[in-house]
Length: 316
Image (cartoon, rainbow, N blue to C red; front, side):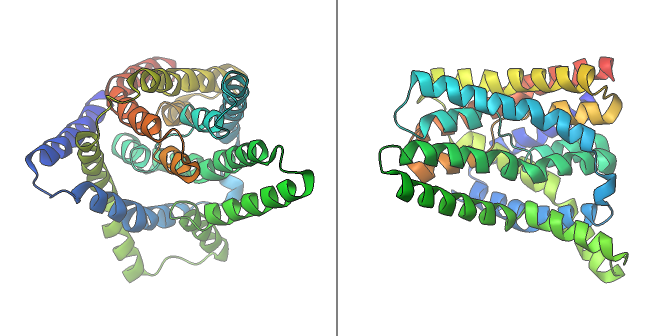
């Protein structure tokens, strides 16, 4: 497994080198990311989940992952709000930084490259719930803070409107929607038609190399000099604290072993996801910090991911 993880890092390094040499032009990283996120990944997700049934989903694994993650989200938010009450969105952004991982672009690539379809099936269930489980409560917390002092009724109405809009955008999403469609298609009992399945296979095979090269290009493009100290602290929390909490509950609380334990902990150990930056941009705060934290945590994952995998190989 370590050899496969090193191969993943090698492809990321090739992407970094391509960015350094300007092989794909100034917009190469953005173009590859858009293609991976909007075209190749939905095909892979739909084809994988079309073979899954809701009753067969790994509910113990999902509980072992999301219970400590939500506790961490609320705990960090409360702590940050007591220390830094303004700007109102800052506590929620930092809470997301410690809990919202790059489960799609990097997570799917790592799960597929190292564990194949069995690991990918478990990872997808975690990734598909992340936006709903984390972005919706984070939005609610920010809007509650923003509504303080505006009068009770307008604030409540605005909160309901924003939460409803966030829930809608979360469902109509290139990660969540193909998962829901795949589960619905599975419920019909029909096989995927041969020609359609062949197209999905070809598209899905592009996810791993395209995503990893895009990550390398992104690492080369953005620096981490601004907000470096806070970025390191957030990265340590995301790469060490969250997976440690998930490991403790999954191993001792839910008794997970083998592949479910490994996938759950590695999903928690992934670096900070780009949606944290989008969330920061939405409210116009902490944007430099979020960018630096994403780049720093992705770079550090080269080391921490290997260490977590080594530890899990002894526990599983």
